[in-house]
Image (cartoon, rainbow, N blue to C red; front, side):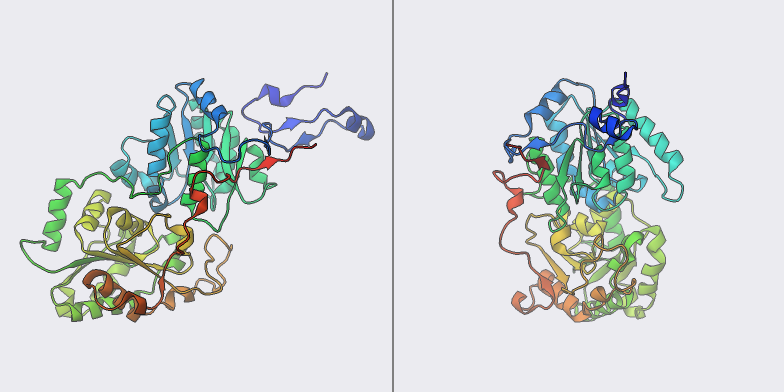
Length: 455
């Protein structure tokens, strides 16, 4: 009698063994492993839209109260910021199946400030020696006995998240794959096609519809109020009214160290800051960044003249996340690259000018409108390359960012904050197509892999 190994480990091994007698007799070998998912793909005759959600998923969660929904997302906090609405709806729709997020420890300040109601497992799994941390994390997840596992890794750390999915013990494992036969899809029970021509917010909308959750990308995300202590500290640092008049612009010349190609040159930031201070005598600049980025920020400040330097504050490494939120709330404008603070400024409602190059605004920004924001982008053939190519075609010499001129940035900022000039005459300004994303609407088919009925 042949042993069905999958029956011995029903939630650990995502594969099953074929028991094809004819194949065994022809080859004289033991049964081979079938790499198809244990749960069959949905039939094409089923409702492809799932506007009310998948009833089978809802029944499964209702039958397993107390078992959490585990979501894995190892990414920067800028990306997670756009997902807080999804977690809020998930927690509300399934109160007996609390959501548990697995993410990097660097995201703790943001999540503790913006989502204190969310259960989070912070774990750093270093790529150079991942096994000890991975094993510890896998055991922790298995002890939770999750009812549902959601893999939201679509660009990086996909091997890590796929293996966590396999070992989680969850009966339902959902994720995004670029190809139906992609190896990481074999551990999933439900596979969504990842369309790289849409932003992650649209992919998250597909998942929300499948789970019967409201779409959370149509309005500005909910943010908590500003702490009075943080507001008082920022006002003291900047000399806010009633102590002075004039505008304050926050400038973040940094980007994640993992993708430095997103940085606009420091010399260009310096030139724009110098021109702004010369043209607006009551303007104040606040430079931000992490402690590791403080040296770069200081190099920009020190190259200004003494008369200008007094109106520029180097706050890099000096602010908590709550204080950064307060700074953006109290400031009159924000200038920065595609990074976490840019997304926080947009969510806060601060007039924002974002600079894009290796990433395309269409593939990064949420689908909701931003009436108080402008984005500069030069459409080079090699852009976007980030997450599209293993190695940047330029070898790291980000010509796409260098092609954004200080004059274009200056004129866009003055139009955004002072109403100067005609928007139609601004150069290098990206504008979204007027056609809304049909993928974000109800009544459109989900990109869930299914198999055709054989008739």
